[in-house]
Image 1 (spheres, helix red, strand yellow):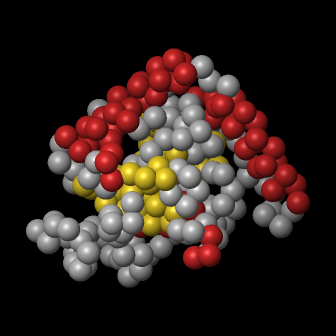
Image 2 (cartoon, one colour; image 1 turned 180 degrees about the horizontal axis):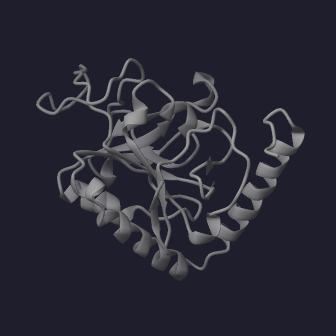
Length: 222
């Protein structure tokens, strides 16, 4: 019988699994991590969803997450618009972040939690009222000929992924809050994880599921 989110065992099981998966990820040898990450990124680069995307949302890897360096470099080289997460400081509310236009590594700087993020000069997408492929202009958006739009593909980090696509993050809900905003269900969500991060765990009503996941062994659309 599935655990209810109100059952103390629900949080306990997720917390225990999160700690174990982070421990295993942290223990990866740097060369092994890079080897696995390279395979995973090649799987993404071979996707028609990547080839056809005008706008992609990525992340800058930290804490031994699957690297996205190849994806970032290829996206910028191909002229794709790259959106990266930028966490708002805690006084803005718990677990709040934006997706922000970033045009190169030189626009990254340490953010509210010490992670590399687009700097304050980089414009964020509007947070509310989106419809799929909505065309909206903003005074701070740098390219009026290519106004902001939702990404065609969202590549997401994860601590764990269930075979059904439930995502286990760090427990603060940054991605769940952002991806549950109106209109965001239209974008394909792909989690990048190592194969040992595929695990069964209970999911709750606020968890935004992934449409697929990529590991060094396979890429699966659900």
